[in-house]
Length: 163
Image (cartoon, rainbow, N blue to C red; front, side, top):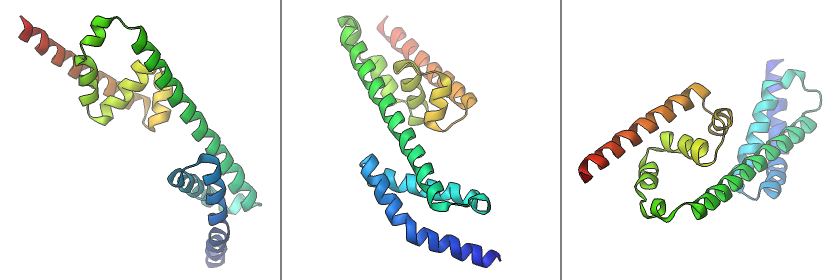
């Protein structure tokens, strides 16, 4: 029984994956993202294999939802870039002339830099940062704290050296 189910799943994958991935590719305009979405749709199907009566419909609905999530993420990123660009344009020249904080943020390890950019620069709530990064809110809070401590220590050293 289990063997026939595995065979059916394997045959379904061989029959539908190329077409599903191609459909996703046309929607997201990126090969890697399309394959990730198609693979995730199949992963979700396997998790419910015995309870799904229409696997092909399930795959396409799941992939459509994942594509929609991808588009929403891209729109949030575009808005964040526009907001950051607009904020940079209205900042006083003195702040723009002193790029040390920006450079310091850029020098943070990615684990700390990404939450700082999303939370403080893109003004996203912790819940959204957590969802975008796939990390727990508590981890995001800890990373933000660690990043602020690094920034604070660096700025203290900079102030001490200018005296």
